[in-house]
Each structure stands twice: as C-alpha cells, then as structure tokens.
Length: 277
Image (cartoon, rainbow, N blue to C red; front, side):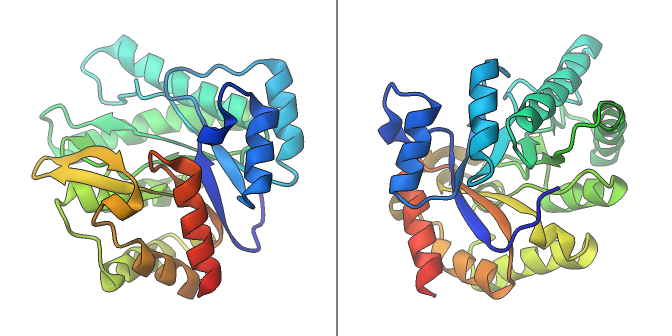
C-alpha cells in the first residue's frame, strides 16, 4: 500500500483538454496544470488494454491513480446472477486498477430495494467477504472502498460505510462529500459538519484511514430525493472552501477526486485554494 506525504488533487477520468487523445496526452495535461493524478473511470465496464495498463503503471510512480468501478453494481439485487456479476465487476476493477498502479478503487455498492437496513448491511457484508477472499488469494493490492451514496434509496450512508470498513482490513471508505450533502438534501455543508465527518473516520477506523484517504468532491444539484446531477463548484451551493480547510487542518493525506463537469478546472481550483491556506 502507498504511503502519502500530502493530499493529492486528481481528476475523475481524463482531463477534458485531452480531447480525442489517450493516456499520454491526458498525463501531459495533468503535468501542465500541476495536478496530481487521475481516477480511471470504468463506469461503463472494466476495459483497459495491456499497453495502457503498462503506461499508466509507469506514470503511477509520479502520479496518484485510483479507479471507479462500473455503475451496474448492486450487491443486494433480488437476482442471484446480478449479485454474482456485481461481485465480479468489483474484482475486475480491483485487478485491472492494481495492474495500472492504482492504490484504491471505489464503487456504489448496493440499493436497499425496499429491504430494512440491517438485512441489506449483512448482505453487502457477505458479498464483500467474497470479494476480499478473491483479492487476497490473487494478491491484488488495492484498497476496496464502497462510496457514500447520493440518494436515500442507495445503500451507503456514512455509518454503513464506516462500519463495513471496521469489519474488513482491506476496506476503507470513499467519502463523497457531495453525496453526503445531496443525500440529506442540504446537510453536511458546514465547517463543523465536515470536521465531524473527518473526526468520525479517524476515531472509528483509525488514523491510517485519514492518511490513505480517497474522497470525491464536485458541485451538486439535489432535491428532497437526493442527488440529481453534478455541477461545477461555483455553480452550486457546495461549501468547498470550508471542506478544504478541514482536510488541511486534520492533515488528511491521499487523494481527493474532482468529479465536476469541468473536471480539471475545478480540480485546479481546489488544489490552488488548498495551497493558499
């Protein structure tokens, strides 16, 4: 596992300025903008050819790499074959990401499907055990991170993610601050609330969870039902400045992934603000 000396600001996928270019062009943009890395987006399937894996692995010496698993994951599906496919997609994400030099993967784990929270938690826990068994057997060395989700219909509130991290050594949270904000239709957006989140992660899981951090941030539009869509930071009510202050004051290290539509510009905005403090 990687040891971090700072908080790194990375883009969700290739920067927009990459255009029709590929990974070499993407990393050139990151370098030119003084950004720290990227999250590989496997959201429509885990596909990455050998040359790209080798290239990104080489770049991971100088850049921080994470990966986001496919959207078609539901460890609490009513259909057994969909659960099996979801487990396999997470394992595939971990395997390919690891070969490309990533230190961490994240995914949206499950939907409640009208079932009570405790039953769903146990189901997610059982399926996570299957995933961990395979990645340990195959010596795949990445953190497995269910993400805090943006809608109350999705499994993955802060407590659920923290509890799963306490149940498994290889599991840590991916804290999506925009999702916490949207899921609660406007909470989790003040200095004190951000502080409580970070404190809770450190106290309940351990300091190492703040030194190997993997989080997401973007502007976000939401309704009473939760997340609607990502926005650019300045077009939203997301109080990113206080969040960045909290991350700095708590000495959080690892990766903060910017998921705004204008990926690299907001990523730069966040990094520049962090460095100005």
